[in-house]
Length: 138
Image (cartoon, rainbow, N blue to C red; front, side, top):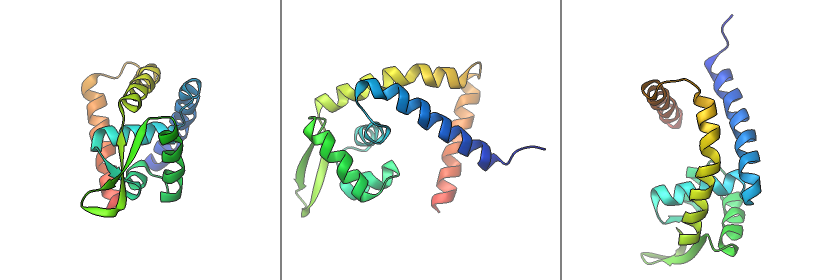
């Protein structure tokens, strides 16, 4: 009997989280921190609430992650010029450099996961997974 697609995707998620966590550990970066760096690079300056939503963590967790990242010089916190009560988080050059290091240690993991899958097939799978995410977000 074929396994439900949700079960297979959930299993892959757990495997990836474990392997990514292990790969990032020597850099002193958690998976949540890596995700936050990636989001800030892709989306630019973001509020804590935006970062939390885009990183799949709670606002409280995002605040804790960002406190560590700010202390390490990977992000800055600045008042939003259009709304003084909102603090915008911005990626620093040091944060961008750390993100490059993270990507370098994660690249072999992605290559291992993809195995002999063609670039076209990998792109098709990525599009399908992105569609699944959009469908669930509503």
